[in-house]
Length: 348
Image (cartoon, rainbow, N blue to C red; front, side):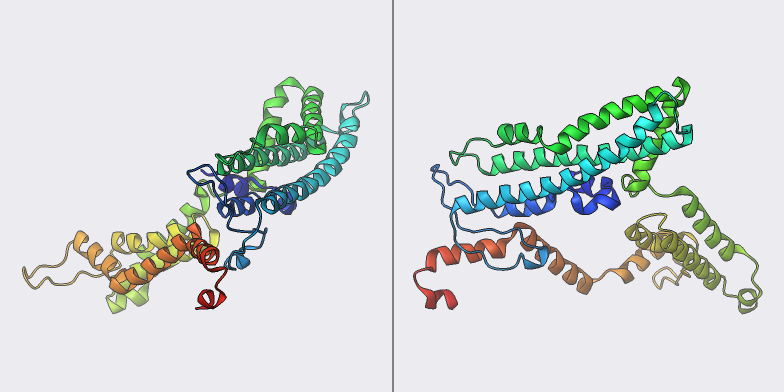
């Protein structure tokens, strides 16, 4: 899994706006000018950390020094936000740790466990941000390879180690050890498990696996509706209609409970429809026999996917590829570079 996705899943909700803007920096680096094969460096764009809605604006020519200054100014701004959260939370937690680990032990075991979980969230926040800085600097150095620039990773990471959030990170590690010592040895494994569970509930791992209980309840409700002796369907002699209602109940349950991702629920609909017998078989003209399950499945899928849908999806994929590679920005920059002395041609 890419780090950008990991950062999104593991981010603590109350501090989400204070994390390093990893994806924003990646968008910036994708638009950085690269070194030519001769080793010379010819920038073609002046970049800004704009919002995604503004990325379609054409590139403007500008010096590389402006690009570098913009990158590190944004990094300094993000580090400032990380420092503010880290220092404030560390000082708050440190006061409570003194109460928990002092000679009189003024906090109960339940309060110590809650404090340990809060500390685990803070440690996760600082650790993820440190990793984000390291990874984005590696990408920066990789994009600048061959330009004659010295790698920035060693010097910047040395400065990051002296940042307040790095100091708070080391203090937080020490506080975690103190809280574990304040608990009975047989309670420490349970304490660590509680901290892991708190991190998962806060953001990480929620999408990694389906929720078994809502999944089972939704499918069971659909099965009950499909097989229950309902008088209305029995009198009409339409068992397929009742099974279709069961599929609808199961699908609505999965959507409401979010037991599985929405796309997985959508893909389950044709599977449940065929497996439950909700789709009545048709008579095959060539053989004079009723359709078998594989033929029914093929017919259901064919009704959900045709040439028009393929054309629309292909257009969306092509548009996504162009946006992902920023081909329109590169083309605009190339035209501007070649025609900058001929404005009429550029307008055409």
